[in-house]
Length: 163
Image (cartoon, rainbow, N blue to C red; front, side, top):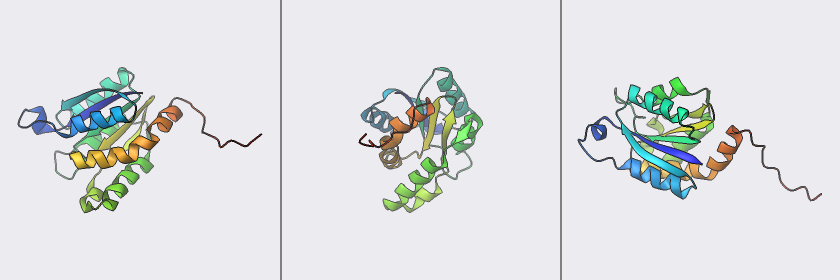
């Protein structure tokens, strides 16, 4: 599975501070069995859309973003992602928020991240904190291979009937 990690952060992209969540994301994608490029650090807003479109053109199986999912006026990653998605997968975003809240992070329910499919690529938005990335990848990693298989036309796994 080829993966791209994208960090959406105006300040990290401007060099105000170092991106911390992107490297965590890349490491966790590798641990999930992906060959990872990035993290690519871009400002939030239209640069996120451009990075997603470039990722689609490059044929990535999965693109996971970190950052830009909150409530500030500059948090536009979900809007930019929706411009690219063909089909949303609401269960992933719902599970990410629920897991964060269950882990004792009440503000996890404020994340506006989305997940879905564009072409043959799975795209998932995670929060910008390193903890949010860790919690999110704990939810995503176990289903990542199956989701990619399904997007590429794979059949559902069937229990052995013993026949």
